[in-house]
Length: 427
Image (cartoon, rainbow, N blue to C red):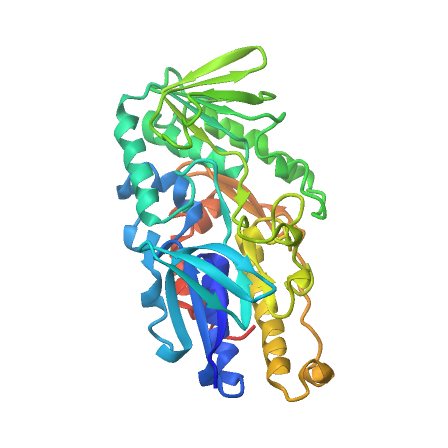
């Protein structure tokens, strides 16, 4: 009989977690399980912990490189060879009607893969190539190398973006280059390097003040977090510039194409000069290969928020993570969505294999429903010893932020995640 491909586009949090879950809890329970093959398509052959980039971009000595970058194919050697394949390449088009994807392979060839089921988990790209695995691990390391080479001679840095990525990057660079003021000092006097953090808003970390639509209104203690973060930034020599929208950058590729370039940043009423410039404003969903009819206005894949199916695309097509419209971008929400997606895929695959097909769907139970956690959950390290944040809607102490995230940016958790041990139970 013909092989049935379950294709997963993307080799990061959503893609790898879904693959492990399917291989452990879905494929073995299907009739003729040997006919089903999970195929991961990833532009990178290694998975890395993207939240660690604000510290990792500075030096390889600051984080354990063996935990930061992990080989994807080796993680899946535990499964039968007939049930798994890794494809090193970039998806260039999806034909949801003909049910196939075209892949630009890493070795300059192309391949078209037909699918029985499809998961879109391609994530999102950051404006700065320093802050995400926008292409592959080699490209990321090249960007870090160029930045590190220029860093010792830089006297002025400008980071644009008042969200967690910008704040964390400014804090890490401030501590590394300037050190930290004493306990009884409110700010660092005469920092070695002039570091400016620019935001278009009236505050840094605005989600603590005004949450995204659908998220609970934060308590007063949480609303005080941005001012605490600003105090910590002052102690490592970071100056915050608020209510400033950058309108132009010269040269145009500074900070994006050339991470080591000097830059002139223009805003209404003036300019800023930077020896090094890092844009840390938002992200772009990696969904350009998806037909426009299947995307929302903000470019994400239009996904059923309850079932994680891409309803408009046809049967057995799903999306998860930053590329999906299911929920706001957050890693913990991806973990909560994985069991729901896999449970619904399992039901769909059983229906497809049944002689009754869709007509017998009632005999396979009901869909599992995903409900987004709307409580405030955000941890923001501010260097290697302090941080701010909230969990389950409550503000947490600085040492909690350090213990959970700040000490190594979650690397203490990724071993279980990447290996699939986190998904040992079906959930």
